[in-house]
Image (cartoon, rainbow, N blue to C red):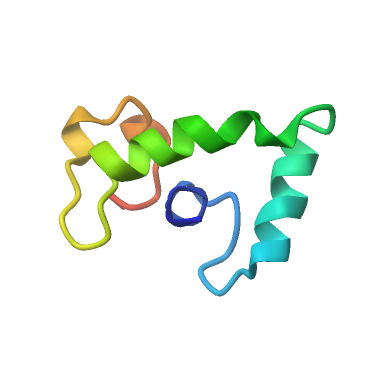
Length: 66
């Protein structure tokens, strides 16, 4: 959820349902396709308190650095 929020896909106050609906909009056939990628990004770079934005491959698309 943190990655989707920081990328601007969902609002900062979004619920779990909002996250699911967004993933379904992005890939209606298989919304779970984002699970592993977002988990990896959140674990490796997009940490709750200490981000490593410069190493993240979504750095150019992320709202966190703005």
